[in-house]
Length: 304
Length: 296
Image (cartoon, rainbow over all chains, first blue to last red; front, side, top):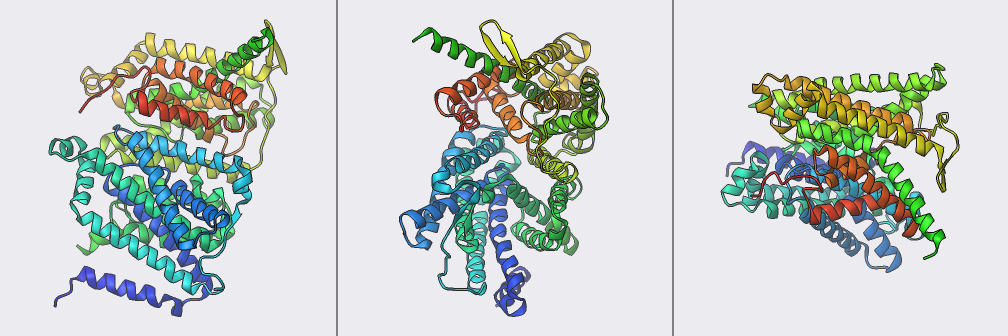
């Protein structure tokens, strides 16, 4: 059996990720687990932005929908956490489908505008409904794995969610759906003329990407054990975009690379306080202006 | 309905119109940018914020007279807008990039400016000195002087800008570029200069709004987010790129918010704009004054 170079490198990276808990300490394992959370967000945002050319500024907000739905269900009704996380993901998918049906049937920047408004409104709604959400203070949520003090089991859960996301994305991209999405990005008129129901596929891409955002949000809620409006804030969205753009938009691996690099970088930049946010924002502008293919694009271009 | 409740209703209506006039400075600029370049400037709220800070420091640190400070602010923002177009947005037209380019680059610029403001000016709230009397008597009502004067200045700026766009030769060249880019290019209009001009004027309008509204709504690094968002809702409501639409829709949104916060619920006042956006997208996606560009 001949294994292609791509499959071989994926296998090596996967084994490395499995062995990581034996190589680094708890602190950095925690950092990497958080990086996987962002990796899920960045790579699913990339399905929408990089493959389908549709822009959502609500990805972090949908993660917070997942987080709050899950947290509120567990705290008020007491259903099992994995089920609550799934409900959060479904809730995020339902809301995104509604917004998608409204704004994706139109050409132009309507999705970007309505998701931006949505995330800002969600923040206000969360802060105003203090009785249920405890506003800016946030809700403390029970841990996903009760009684577990070590980060290692959480690390494997994060890895599992990331791997499921990547397998789904890879499968979707190689389906006709993935090709339709790329056709829509390149030329929506031509795609429509060839009989592609562009609205339907744009909405499916949006709903799928928000499902995973909601799932990741639910995991994050029960991992850090605090749900606050911070999860859905626009600076989180900036981070997601910066990761995707740095790693390489429209590539499967780029967003993950970007997420891990920026997550580690923010640990080192922590002592500089707010400057790291300035640097990340500048990174988006500079990468878009001068290196649109991102790190993955640059490396891949060299190998070929 | 008593006379008192009618008077109260009219007072809220008046407030709505005053607020709407202030929104129109933001919306007109966004509309101009969209008309000429077919892009949405997601950094527009941050230009508002910069206008506020520049005018604040000119007045408090350099002790410059508020009126002179206002003109310096507007000029500074005009130059900044021109520079943003030349350095960041120009590649969209010269390098044949996709729709994602302007969205990401202006969003990146927006967060860059917010965080830069946090680092440079600090996260605390600042209150610029008032430039108007506390209360103004207007027929039967007494309204806040800041809001009243801000609205009057906004109205004056809107009228001047409108006349500039509709009557002067440069303004007509801007309109021509908005109507048909290639056609304008063929008849000898420097379309790149028009891009810069549209961006410059829009930035100057946003800066002017920031300078006159800062005493009303405190100044802090994120203070442009909500005004920017209102601007986006207004241009969708008015019809993307429609100059008249953006002005009239500003007043409509101002009135909806003012009445909504009194008769429905005050903490949700910023949520009404989202409901307006939803309604427009559902029932009249081309906006009140827009034309459907295509039906496929």
